[in-house]
Image (cartoon, rainbow, N blue to C red; front, side, top):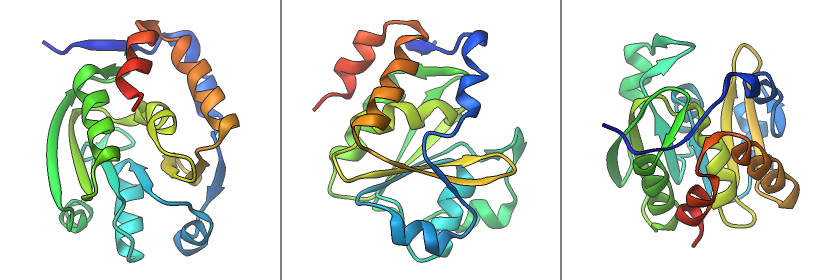
Length: 179
């Protein structure tokens, strides 16, 4: 059984459709605007960054896109990370395992692939809080492109607000994400 720290209430789903940053369809343009390190959330985002020659410092994948399995070519191309870690994180949740692995990946000097058994979609929110100043979080916006989030005070405030409104123990999540 997973140690669920936060769970997405149905009433908050609509707000999560609003992107936390700018939407890009051109990976080269996104990379020219991105900070360092880069945290990628999602298989397609990770794939596009790797194909453009930039392995994310941390990437979270679940081998799915828009509720379907990713193409074998996409799955096969996601590689080149210094280390890989598997975590369980059921849909619409943030588990202790995911939050710990995310914090560990961000703190590491090695590139880290987090292979999520379940769903990684909500990980962009804690990633924005855990990332250092100047970092970027990139996640997919279905049928629109990739969202580039600058990890600044405004993005952190919005991510914190959304996490606080989830069901569960937001304070525990914040403690797990802090350095």
